[in-house]
Image 1: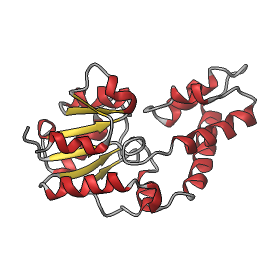
Image 2: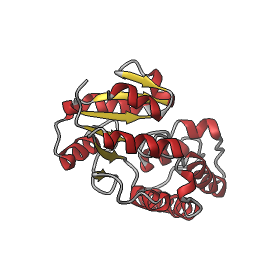
Image 3: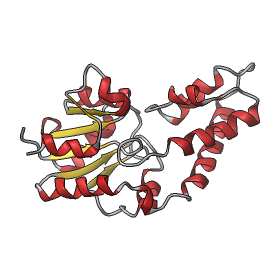
Image 4: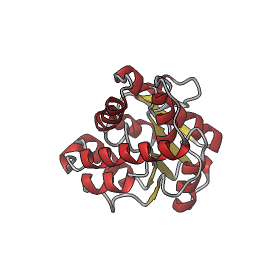
Length: 212
């Protein structure tokens, strides 16, 4: 297959910050007296911060105003950013970096398409702020996945058409977004089982089998 670019989701593909998200949401939920466990956290995968908050508040005995919800979302994000400061370049798997370097050596443009507003902070903590040819994140879009906006923006920044790019995603909403945008969708982790995924992998290294 002939492709010009690969656009990676960040969390769950390049790195894993699920435990930080869980801890930050749980701090908020505990303060509000709302039950929250890892099963609840699984429902938040691939959705926006406000959508995640609304899912958590489903178990609340009371309703909150939009202003209160915005404050809660900001509180969670501050908790999360503090936890992210624990990240170091050692949190980037060596095989992941080696695979991306090999893909670049094969002539591929590499981009990030993440709904996270903390994308640049995470890339900085991992020591790869300048590694990618383009980064599109949650600070630049108005619609989260499964809307394809973030992937279309990444493709535009890379100077390629959607049909010329592979999107690598670990969330079902991300696969939906990729297909809605006209991309070739590769699923990893949970998303490997999505029926709309064009290709399923169980490790980043398997991308090298697609790009000969």
